[in-house]
Image (tube, rainbow, N blue to C red; front, side, top):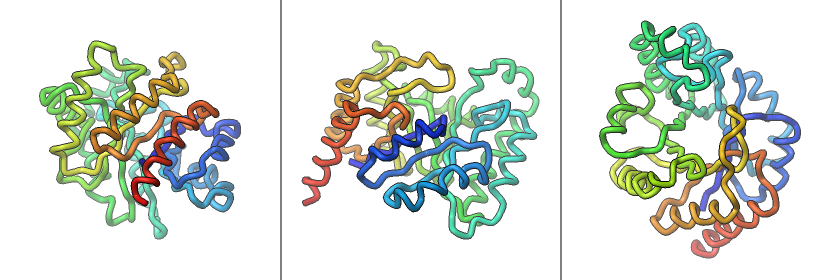
Amino acid sequence: MQIDFFEEFPTVENLEKLSLLESPCTVYLAAHSVDEFRQLTAPWREKAPHISWSFWPLLPDSYWISPFSFPSELRQLVEDLQRPHEEGLEILLDLELPLRAPRLFWKNARHFLRNRRHIRGVFEDASRHHIQIATAEYPLFGSFFQGLLNQLGLAYDAHTQHHTILMFYTSIIPTFLHKLSQRSLLHYCKHTQHPVKVGLGTIATGIFGNEPILTPSSLRADLQFLQTHGIHQAVIFRLGGLDDEYMDVIRSFQTHSAHTKD
């Protein structure tokens, strides 16, 4: 199984957890610009050549990317991405509602349609700028919810070239919705034309600081669920939460995959 990692807070302490990673993987690293992203990753590109990197842009005030973001911040992001990237660049668009700053719902509502066009433009221009796109999207709870996300500009259809990471965080999803979210996830993976990865977690808190933590045994159960149903790509939130217990679980699935290929 391919197991990748998000890292929202690229401190020295959190990035030191890279030394635990032995198998090839991708780290989705948060930064405020392409230049900052390259500065953060530069020391590790030689020390850890088995790790690939994806730029996870955070907006200064809007934080997440949505049609409710400040238009000036979306324009600045687009300009940053339109600079030459001859060597190629992978990016993660974290598509989430502005729950951290609810005032953005009404403050930027009048910019909704224009902002949605800006975000879609990133997809449309990606190949011209040598960019590969991944999206982090909300978990699914049926076709109605999927349609709502599409209308809100928080999910994108098969006409855009990208791969999707569904945030299937069972430590956060209410227990009574686990079965529904599992069924919806499997239905989506079966019918979508996009490559899909599944986000698991959380094994460390995010920007809210109070996210429930997934135990190693629960992480094992989530990975087992994916493996049983033929889903072989996961992304764990987040790198900074890794320790020996989590790594024992992760290695067991990486080892199983390696043996299966042999």
